[in-house]
Image (cartoon, rainbow, N blue to C red; front, side, top):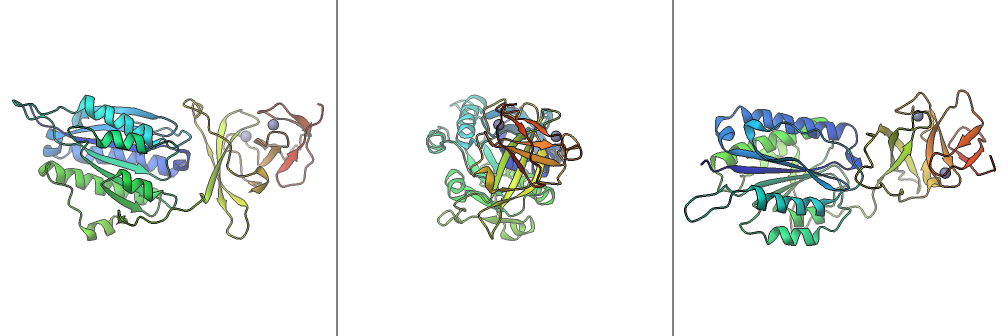
Length: 341
Ligand SMILES: [Zn+2]
Ligand SMILES: [Zn+2]
């Protein structure tokens, strides 16, 4: 039997990955698989497992021989359950990786690649302790923190080696996956030795290695917040991203993303961490689901929805709480306070 080199990907699919980053990660995995499949040594030894995490952790690809792996499609969910992902990784490794016996050499130690852009929303210390206690060991864990919001003090405790990728866009993520491809390719030739990391090659890929003893301080509060809302016309879900305004305590509208219909299938998204009155208007931004370019806030429950400015429909019915009221149009975000409809 051939000894396999298991490679596990743990991919963050939280709402902060909305839009380009999530597609770029999916493409990156696809290209990594395609490149490795062209290499006969990798084809012979590599087996791949993919775990996605957000509200929950999910196995997208159980450990599978490289030739048979298909690129999984990633789907956005609220939350960043890194702890749940570590627990699922431990279960997967103990069930899927072949252990050595006196007679037979089992699989090589796994390589684990964790890709995240934020901070965990669940307990990760317990799951990490259980993972570290695994015998034989869970192998080497490499962490890739992407973008400006990564909690490196956590990530560098979880991972043996942690990298920072400054930009979270398709170009930088494509380079990151080139680095992953080369690292796995090199490990195939020397599976017992840790991935060799050349400083110059890291810099070329836009990666910086994080000093485990002194990880960069993460921001005390996030500079971005995410608000979920429902389209008034289609009742479909969407996500609004707001960025903190450096000159005030307000958050400025940044971008709107359509959300999949099953976005809340794994759990609720929770309320935004700041008051609705601190969110500065997305006014003029088209709804990703319909032609509306106006936005209304319910004065009773705070829910936002898109609004038909052109026709200035005077009646408002809140999709979240049922509040009915008349729209007092003022061109920004109108707050509709309850009145007996
Ligand atoms: Zn709409
Ligand atoms: Zn309401």
